[in-house]
Amino acid sequence: MVTSLPDPLARCRPPVVMHKLTNQIFALLVIPLLIAAALFGALYLKLTELEKHLMVGNETTDSLSRAMVVLNDVWVGSGTLMLWRATRDDRLLEEAQSQVETMKEHLRELKEAPHSPEIDKFAARIEDMEKSVGTFCELSLQPYSVNAMRSASKFRALTRRLSNSSFNVINSEIARVKDYSAQDNRLTAIIQGMLVGSLGIILVLMVGGFLFSLAFSRKWNILLRNTSLIAAGKPLSPPISSKDELGMLDRALREMAQELASAREREMSLIDMTAEVICSLDPVGRLSEINPAVKKRFGFEPADVKGMNVTALLHPEERQEMRDNLRRCMESQGHLTCTNRLRKYDGGYAFVEWSMRWSERDGRFFCVVLDITARVEADRLKQEVLSMVSHDLRTPLTSIKLALDCTKEGVFGPLNQAGLATMGNAQSSADYLINMINDLLDIEKDEAGGLTLYKELVDVLEVLQAAVDTVKPDANSKNIRIEIHCDEVEAMLDVDRIRRTLVNLLGNAIKFSEAGSRINLACRKHPAANILRFSVRDFGSGIPAEKLGFVFEKYRQVGTGSDGERKGSGLGLAICKRLVEAHGGTIGVVSRIGEGSEFWFELPRSSA
Image (tube, rainbow, N blue to C red; front, side, top):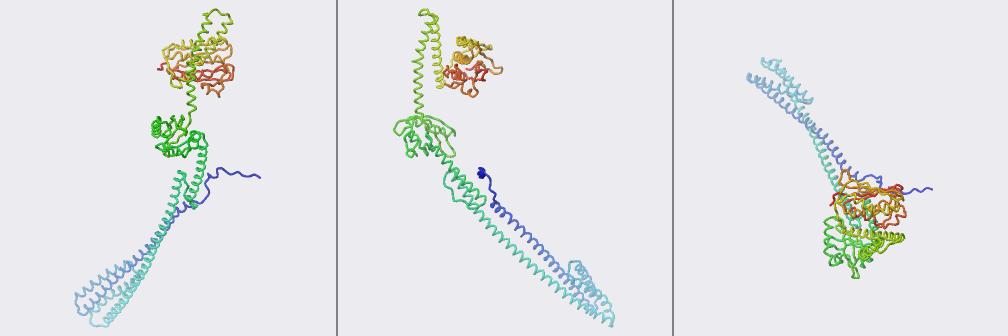
């Protein structure tokens, strides 16, 4: 049965859930808009209907007013006719006729204006009556007759019908006005209800939005507080129980806090288990945290030194210097290294090296304290050994070399061939020891900053020839030919130091070259820059590519493991590098296995 392995990326994938917070925000925004749109739509329809009712009511009122004006004209004209009939005053007849014309004009306006069917009936009665007025007037001028009586009777009948019709029009229009008024009141009540409902809905939505904002603000404040607590490494607030995005973010923060706590525990475990002292200082230099290594290194319990100013543990002569170093480290916002003496629990002092860095975010110094007492003691012993080598070893060797030279030259008497060969071997051994001592002393001087150059303007070809003359006996012993290729050039050089560099490189090439081969020694001017390039090319076994980076280190032997390699001290190439760099130059090597090596260095021609 195949068991599926857990997916390590599963925690990184977002879970498939409904974004409830997004839905809530969407609902709070969209639902009020939809409700408002529906309410405004309904309110618009009702207001349109109310406006229409008001318009019809206004038209009805206007029709009723015009009908009353026409009716008034009729009654006034009828009364004037009756007076004319009784008095036969022509002025009253003219006034009646003028009143009829006015009534016609008002009737025309009534018919042209919007009106109800009852108004049409009322207008027809008026027109009938208007037609009978002329007949009534003509018959009224005649003496008493049956036709006149009939005309008068007909006029009275028209007057009664007009009166009834006018009452019907008035009652009908008043009823219409009341009906529209009732509808207007109903629409007004509906609109008021809609407005009250809208206010209620808005109030409910405001309360909902307020409660939502309170819940959101509470969750958001918990998240913000938790981020600060995570940064401080303190316990988190109670979890958010919701399943929305804020709840998911809270759970993610808690997982991150657990991971950070685990990482912090692992980090503290590593710090506690390390053999070196690691500590933190506040801005004034008080120890705020320190690992248990202080007990092993200096004898103090961590609790005994916490809160103590670190300068109190230093030698009195170095306390102010430590304060200055802390200030410079804080101002530079970078890394600083210093050494001083730190008091141990037993009262003695240990030499320590401080490696400190100021953290602006944490407001603390983070320091690693290395006990370098053994290294300081080793340096002291080394200086004593170098002093002994310089004075107690090199001087006797120089005397022995001088005695060997005198003996070989026959100062103390002639030697046979065996004696001369022995003296030659003894001279080579003495030269080798003296050169090795000089290399060692020069390297230590360079490391201490005490290597001084004595430059002079020289012919470079003469320097190359002198170096070749120095190694010629070794080259002749292996039948190796040294070819010189040099441009005519002069340069400011320390002749002895550059000659030693060339001698070391030539001697190295001779050791790794086969008998009967050749070595190329060259010096070329750079075509564009004021630089000289020296090179020593051999055709020996070569150097493995993985060892090329170590050829100029002290006491390192690189190559193929040949006999020549094992004869060296490992100082020759190291002193070459120091001497070249002291001249402001660079040195390097190019090599291939089986094809040989080319050591080169470049120097400025007029370096001061």
